[in-house]
Length: 315
Image 1 (cartoon, helix red, strand yellow):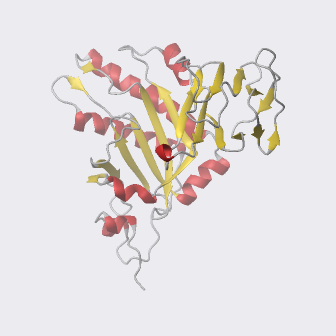
Image 2: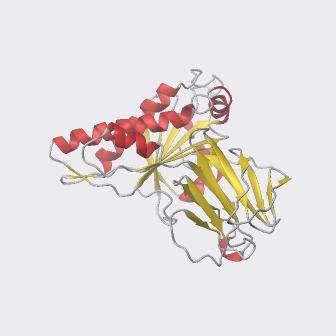
């Protein structure tokens, strides 16, 4: 029986992640929010030094932070929400760094209109390990291109950077609660109010799968930025940003209206479709002109007409 090679063996740096005799435990120090925060900042500055040229400042917009499974669970169970705060504070620091470069005469132009943070785990990571994958364009389909990955081996404590193929990343475990998206503030001078507003601009993230061959293996995502949105089907003709169009004949046009009550910090849903189930409870159908609102908890599972599944996550 052959043993499946570990992630480190497949990219050729297994020895760096093992102690001298292969039996001594690795880095026993637990990861703290401050360690993760400083690590991301270091990788951001490293991306600037590696990607920039002439007077043009270039930097990564998507940051995939790889942790050990236990470390990730620790953050989720006992420090729930802290990774989102780390992402927000990290973006503020990004602007400080970029503003200093603007003041020195450099040209700062974003490659994307958003920042994306994905906190993930991998079974081959040991407790205390932390890795980084940077992307210039978030959610870009660069299947043929290699990704630049940075690791901090426990043996040396020194960051090492490699180019690896996308296929190697298939064993990483992505979690919806570890995804954070923040709009890029297109201003050369950092304004605290504007950044704070931008950070809170995305109220919720919706994720759905469609039983159509064209969407096999894909998930459709929608960022809720307006206080009220409409979820509609493939017959929808409106192109407003407040309309979440799901290209499926199984979704009525319109099917749902979802609103966010800022004073209560709660989401509410009104259903106009033939059938809507929220967390296994049938939602009463109402008229478009007289919507009947029902509370919609975050992380709820919504089923449209018994076919289309949709989840809501807090941004």
